[in-house]
Image (cartoon, rainbow, N blue to C red):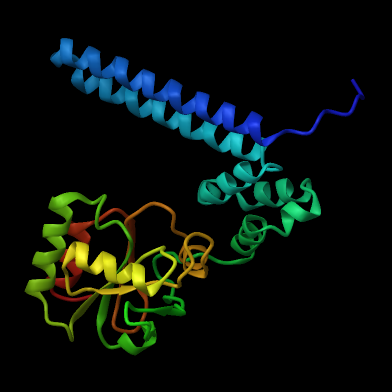
Length: 257
C-alpha cells in the first residue's frame, strides 16, 4: 500500500488518449448507422450523442490531469484549462517536477491561473499584435468604433457563417464597426496566406505565437471562433463560442448598444 507508484509515461498517455477517441469514433459510427436505418429515432439518437460527448470530454480532462507530468498530458491540460477549476490546476502543478512547471505549457497554465479572463462587461485587454505587413496593431486605436473580434474560425464556421460576416460588414460603416480576426499563427507571412485564402477586408492580426499566447490566456479562448463584440468605449458586450447573429444584430443594427 505504501509502495511508490512508477512514474506515468508519455507512451501511456498517448495510448489512453488514442483509445478514448477511437472508442468515441466507433460509438459515433454506430449511432450514424442506427440513424440511417431508423430515421424516426434521429432526435433521440442526437440526445444520446450529446450525453456521450459530455462523458468523453470529461474523461479527456481526467486523463490530462492524470498524465500532467508528461509533455502531451500537460499540453492537454492547457487546452482544457477553461473547463477545469483553477484550484485543481494549481494542485496538479504542485505535484509536477520543476522542469515541467517551468516548461512552456507549465508557465502558460500558471499565467492562466493568475489572470482574470475576459467576461462580458470587462474592458478588452490590450493586444500586442501585428498585421500581415508586420505593422503594430493597437486595439485602443479603434476606441470610438465598435469591434467584432474573432479568435480564428473563418474556416470552421462554414460558408453560412462567412456569408453572415460578409453581409454584416457590408451593412455597416467602418467608423461604426470593424471586424478583426486574431489568428494563432507564427508569423505575419502566415497572415498573408490566410488573407489570400479568404479574400476579405477584415483586419487580420497575430502575436506570432502559435499556442501559449497572451491573447489566448487573457481573453480565455480555445475554441474557434470565439467572438467578442466590443463597444465604442472598449467594453466587451458579448463573448460567445461561435457566432451569435441574434445578439450581434440586436446591438449593431438595433436601436442602441
